[in-house]
Amino acid sequence: MDIMVDTTTCFLCRKMPAIENSHILPKLIVRAICEQVGGRGLREMSTPRLRVEQTAVVTLLCTKCEAQFQRYEDNFARSCLRPYFIDDQIVIKHDAQLLAFAVSVLWRVLVHTLNQRVPSALLPYIVRTVQAWRAYLRGDASGLGEHKCYLFLDRELSVEQIKSSRCLNYVDLRFTIEQGAALVTNFIGVPIRNVVYAKLGPFIFVGTIQDVFCGKADHLMATWREIASHAQADSAVDDGVQVPDEIVATLDELASRWRFSEGDMKPERRAQLLAGFAALAPNAMLKRLHEKDETLFRGPNGAP
Image (tube, rainbow, N blue to C red):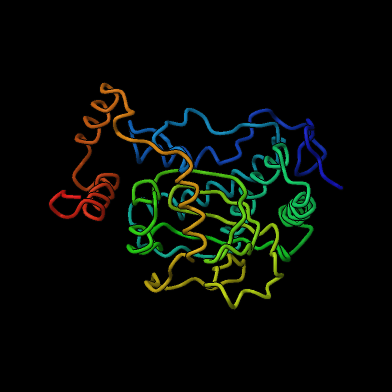
């Protein structure tokens, strides 16, 4: 298999030495999320009550390729993430720049996954996906082939989807991060797609590793909105767009991995968090989303 794992050569260009501090999830994006949550700290969706002190850093890219990815990240932060944190009803333009950013992030997550324990049956599909996305990022391929990328937004989850889930809520959907690979199943538990995902706050990027039925079961699923470089930008937010139930179920499974009760928190830490929360401006997004969660799960008068 034409793949490089555990090497000091850049995984993208395969020519120059890789630097030691390549971030799997973009540092700039993580920093922008941290700015929104203040003293609450960065959290992962699978462990939303534990602070993340540092995201994964590995030997992956050379200085030149890092700069290439940095350009994608700068554009995404400027045109999508920061504006979304100001107004979450903005139109997210699906274009070549968004696709390049999505592929660059998902490719990094997948290469990192190769250094973890991977089921042998899935390994060939992961390798083919890594190769296809590397070719796209290098300019050697004009498209992604069968390994498509998708974007889902937290605003596209319906109230009913959140309320009927086991662990999802507005605050964690907006401000947590997560990365990994998962098997997505339909409503009766039949495997549909093996995917890689990167959750960057309200932006949930998903890439296809393997389509189990090679597209023949797509008519049994809700449409996954593909990021395509030639897509036309919408002029307004489509209120009818909803995250497919199988993606919601996958997110809920991630959020359900680690249970936590308020009684598990040290009193001084809880007091510190409450003080920081009280100091937020009345229109702060974190406060507004927390109030939405309180209304959704406890009722308008705070009663369960």
